[in-house]
Image (cartoon, rainbow, N blue to C red; front, side, top):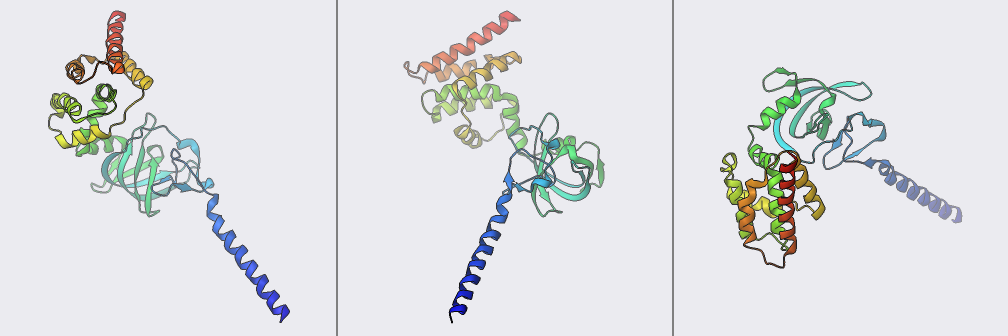
Length: 269
């Protein structure tokens, strides 16, 4: 009986050891948010095996994902020169100076991934059957017809003006409704954005990123160096000024900073 009991104990130890070994096997993976290859970034499960990664497609892109729909047949060249073909349903893209990150559902891998435009050596638009010479141009054209295009364009074209207004309003501690209404009025005064929904504007202003003290000053300086004229928000700043208490020193300090930078730019010109 003793040898039987000993055998049971040994088998139990072996079973536990095998279970622990199996449980740690998947922990050898690492994660990253910038590496793009095949398999590229996997949405909701961005793990990848080391051997699948080559950083030739590691390109800087914007953080925004611009929503668009496209159904493509893609011949994709991995950085090891291996080429494979897949159906790829595009859901969004992120712009970069050297290339785009293109996000969507890969029918080959049966999951959401991100591919680099640099790896797309041959692309066919499944809906039209046409060969696509420039995939980023195709996506940009489709993007212009989406509901989100005008909303995104607001910050592409006027982010340099909106963020200083938000910062000024937030110097009192929070951006209250009457301050958001002032900024919303400025937005609606721009002809191409006058059709934007009022509730969307207000909700967006509520959650808009608020830059820090030095960050916003650098943004203003860069905007002025790039030829932006802060006179367009002069009226909005004047109205915001009436809502502030005199002890809110940062409001007046930042307001004078904008005026000073604008004046110095004119003198240099």
